[in-house]
Amino acid sequence: QQQVKQSPQSLIVQKGGISIINCAYENTAFDYFPWYQQFPGKGPALLIAIRPDVSEKKEGRFTISFNKSAKQFSLHIMDSQPGDSATYFCAASKGGGATNKLIFGTGTLLAVQP
Amino acid sequence: GAGVSQSPSNKVTEKGKDVELRCDPISGHTALYWYRQRLGQGLEFLIYFQGNSAPDKSGLPSDRFSAERTGESVSTLTIQRTQQEDSAVYLCASRTVPGAGESYNEQFFGPGTRLTVL
Image 1 (cartoon, chains in turn purple, green):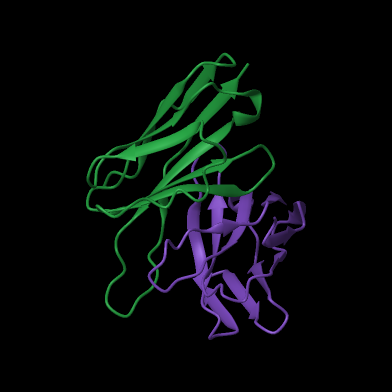
Image 2 (spheres, each protein chain N blue to C red; image 1 turned 90 degrees about the vertical axis):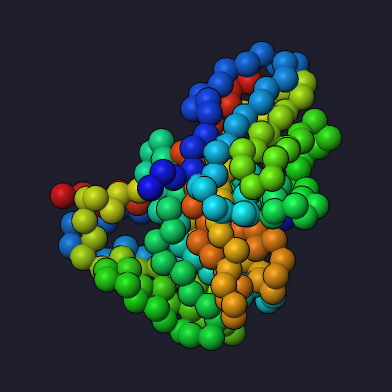
């Protein structure tokens, strides 16, 4: 059962443009929402993460927007660069001393054209 | 410092054979996870180890899958009688224990082992 739905599956953006990837979750117990970036042949690496007590978090060119009532969150990449070309995964987790296993979306393959 | 390492990087095996995958976590990381990444899909949680506590095996897809971890060091994931649907990239991640007042710490992933079952 897919608990985190991610879209689009793939995305092509021109250099300097804005890349937007969306995710929706079902389990209201989730309280940690990270985004991971994965380059070919590498493991995923944490890009940015947010808790549900804030609606937005920004780190450099990367911003997470979070809508708790809609159970949705999105990643915005401003001034997209060719080096941002990678697969991006959203994820969700439930804390409180538990396993903190990550439930991942299906990924978005981003290609930034020069 | 050294990250999470996994071996082998690639493994090709025949249907019905057993395979063993290895993960070396970051030194000092007490928590260790195994995930599976099928082609075109997100990562699926398989198993979690935390120190000497009983592992969380809730993600293992069948009894052909098992994993072990000795203390806070190396972990091995074993798949018995491999099937073609076991073909995937198997990823290992590790993290430290969150500090006081925190619930989460970043999970650091290894590069994965690509398993192909013919």
